[in-house]
Amino acid sequence: MFYKVFRAVCSVILRFYYSIDIMCESSEADFEGGAIVCANHSTNLDPVLVGITVPKQVHFMAKKELFEGRIRNYFMNILGAFPVSRGENDIKSMKTAIRVVKEGGVLGLFPEGTRNTTGEELEAKAGVGFIVAKTGRPVIPITIRSGVKFRSKVSITVGKAMSFSEYEGRKLTGEDYRAISGLIMSKIREN
Image 1 (cartoon, rainbow, N blue to C red):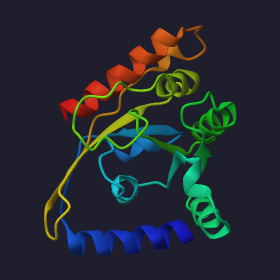
Image 2 (tube, rainbow, N blue to C red):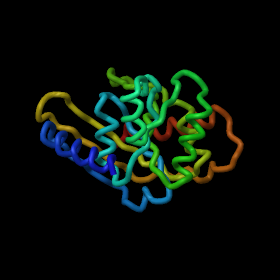
Image 3 (tube, rainbow, N blue to C red):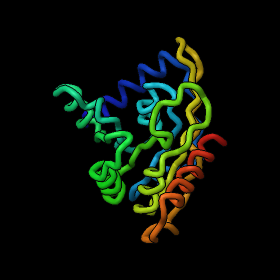
Image 4 (cartoon, one colour):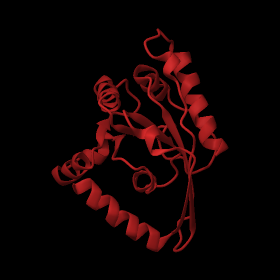
């Protein structure tokens, strides 16, 4: 309930402040039964922009520093986010991510693993490919192009669902996971 109210309020505020244009090539059915949303990440508003674009609640994997303090921790948890220790093999967060998708939820990931403010192409993290391969669920690529000034244009493209179901249950290497992540990031850049 809180998520829906928060989402509606954010949508009104963002649509007042920015000129938001959303183009959607996927259908609501793509989000049913569990899905992974992957987007580029250049501003702090990107998780909120993804949240107001996707028809279901998005559970984001977020850096653990955002959960410091009781109020922030409570707020992040109520929004469905969960912490990840960046730069480490955080098994707990990977298991949580896989569980969210397998239980029919929508998982939100930024394949580059951090905000990319320069626009240069960063290598996508292998962990994204790992989660995709372990769940076998569709990946919906989202491209966000935005300005930061009042009434600047924000263009959000929700691409067609990508299938990686052929990898589910197969034994893969770190290189395979990086290749999957790279394919997703390439699609995000194409949109």
